[in-house]
Length: 493
Image (cartoon, rainbow, N blue to C red; front, side):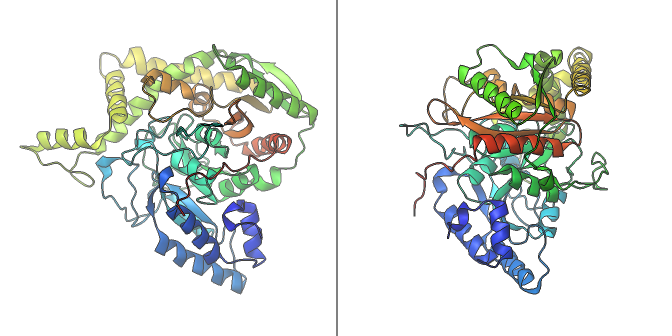
């Protein structure tokens, strides 16, 4: 029998339903794998007792014929999601010791469908980062390494813990979140699949906020089919989140038909950026060939506002972060550093509680929202955002989905000394437009760099048309083959 932790979600679901193994056995196998993977630093809290208890309940449901959609499937949960009575800190010192008395809507949906919680996953602090190096819990390490090298690589961010855990077989699948590429970029860096659903498809209630008009929940999984299964359970309308949309959640798994005949695929000329590596361009061209060979029609399109997306994003996102993070003051919960008076206590708590990248973005955000600069920066960035959305609306009159690169490079080394903040921000160059327009985007690894690291492509869809993304992504995955697991160099067992 295949090693239990090597099973995809779909395979594990089928094995459990056929009673080839139990959820307790499956969960125990993952807990053992997590024990031996400290070098990756993917988990910040392991809930072993809770996991085994949930698994036992699932086994009972399989016995009495009441199994639900995700019954007995062990998942990892990004530390951004509030989980009742379990550490929920967004990998920040400012939330030290915070254990909420409530459950986020997305995680509650998963538990209601029978899933099992293995623990909480590391992330960039408050989801601010593209490498998972800003975490107060320390950097996450990518399970992939370049051929012939022992250099540790980043898994991407901010959902680096989720991506590493899925890639290294430390959970069947994981929740993640995407504000400017934080699901899609780490998915590609680790050879997995990540989808950012349409803004409003999943509830944000109980997710620790970064930029409220951009944040969206989504899964990271091993395959496109697994992604479809996860999103079906995660998505819902929610009266506690007025930005969630009351639309039926389709059977995404049924959309993966392998048939894209007659589908029109847009290729935006503006995504050929300066200094883009030849291997990224080659992979993009290969993706075009795969879809064309499967019967899709390729159409060149124009998205002229693309070049303004990154600068506008790095005005809007920090502005919203500045507002959202003002609530962390050391008074009600989390870290508190005593001071001479309340102002001194605020300053000391926030200074010790926030990391450098979070402080940088709070300062930028406060600046662009200030009275003298609001119109010049924030208001203008919002106008650019509207123009970006209009670009996509115009393009989608003629195409069904859009194919682009997902990242400008493969994974890079941890603790690189030559990276400035602007260079790090450039990792989001292909992904931020999707968040700015509120559209769905899926990224999957479909090739490798010259030194054997995963590279990937992105498909962008119409609002609430994730089904078409899954249909096209399934064809790319069939053509490329499912990315194999990385060689296990980290196991201490």
